[in-house]
Length: 258
Image 1: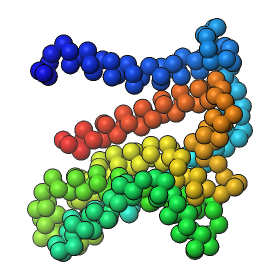
Image 2: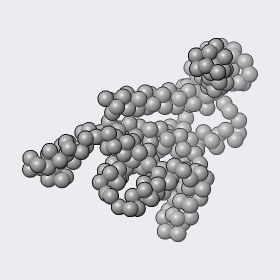
Image 3: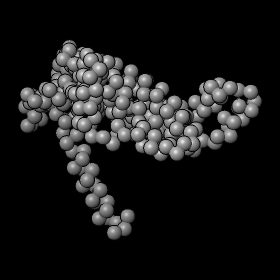
Image 4: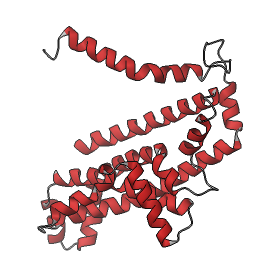
């Protein structure tokens, strides 16, 4: 079958319709005046007003934002230095180290969540924001590490060597030469990690405490009692924020490639 055939275009059109029609339905019914998600009776913003008047939901949103920013900030530092370190070593075990560094992405989330829960219990850590922060950092680091590692592969090592020849120390050469060149990759990976942190449910359930609720966990618990238009409004806002984050990531990725 040719790539540009009419059947291929029709097939892709059907796939995209099946993928995005449910999302479109959620967005449309978030503006529905009726509470019943069976028919559209009129345009209304009352569900958005009720959403922003829900103090528990706003508290969960604040927790998710704080958790996402902190975990991505810590992951950016660990992932960046980890990628730089892996690019400069020539050990025989380098391949194994690279494999271990991305292992959290390959392990199923439910397994990783159970392992983290058992590990925190053995350490005697109280489950709450600290355990959530550690858990999110664990799976956020590989995203940034892979982005920075890919950028370092395409970077000319003679640039930093020239700075060293001109008298700059290793750390100064890294700050003045290497870091500005890999910064688009760091930001791109951080945005992707932030989106994954805001979306995580499985790991957060295992390492969460009884007094703290993140936004995905709040939505998940409310879904058990039935979908309301308030949840549709929340999903619409989350979709808009996610698309914005992905757009920013795409912009930084293009700058990285240039």
